[in-house]
Image (cartoon, rainbow over all chains, first blue to last red; front, side):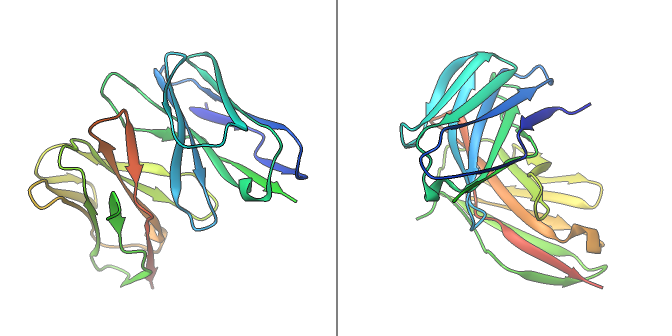
Length: 113
Length: 111
């Protein structure tokens, strides 16, 4: 039974398109995150939600818009895709309430051509 | 100075030896520290967490924390080829509800 799942696993698209990535966790955690891992493998936080409320919004272009319909789901919509958006995007969750151990989804490899 | 610093490696260790991975951090107020393992093409997997000074052991893994010197390390005893991966150090940033990852150390266990 998958704890943190993401769809799709792979996404190949052209510059200028809009795409979405979905994430779901069944761990009962309060906090969810989006990370970007670039070609140099550096893992950088983008957003964090706690019980559907945005608590972290790093310096990410506003073409990226997260949405959390409930505490088990966190989606990421990207407008006007650019070549530099190519990366692996990971969703993660943590218990919240001062507990930061994070559990990652399998990742979505986004390739923009 | 980077917030969380690791040697990128690769660190090559013979099978059966002890692998030692190090990490330094800049935020003196950090309280929670984590080690993740990431195989190529896979997602990071939590292997150890440590919150107080000293050693914490879990099977072949030992995490060591020294808050005064602002470093955290991971020892892997009896290294196996399956331990070959990138190891990410992560530190909870005291002024925000987030953790900062180091750039990772690539470990290679040679048979």
